[in-house]
Image (tube, rainbow, N blue to C red; front, top):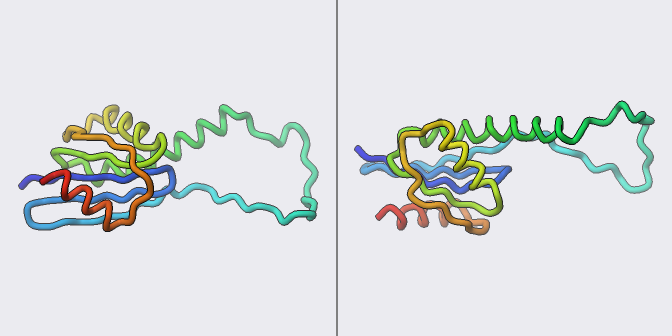
Length: 133
């Protein structure tokens, strides 16, 4: 039985479409990042900060990349058995995801990588179906 996969991905959410001869599965995976809460205008913070309270930019970027790599690995676990993978998405997440697939030595080959804007889950599933027909 052959399985093909299509992934629409950005840094916040991924939609994975798995196509086999008998069925089609649609999975949604969310990146669990830290939500930032904006402070209301005109309200001063309760804490005063010193220069030692701030995190260096490179350390912050490393934390973001570690979080993204865990997110990408979760998606790779879903598509690991696919013979061909179609990668869709806006921005740079699809390129980062492609690099992660190559570094993890996933069995399936990347059939195509396309930059597309925001699509509904049904549009993504239809796009994947048409690609693999």
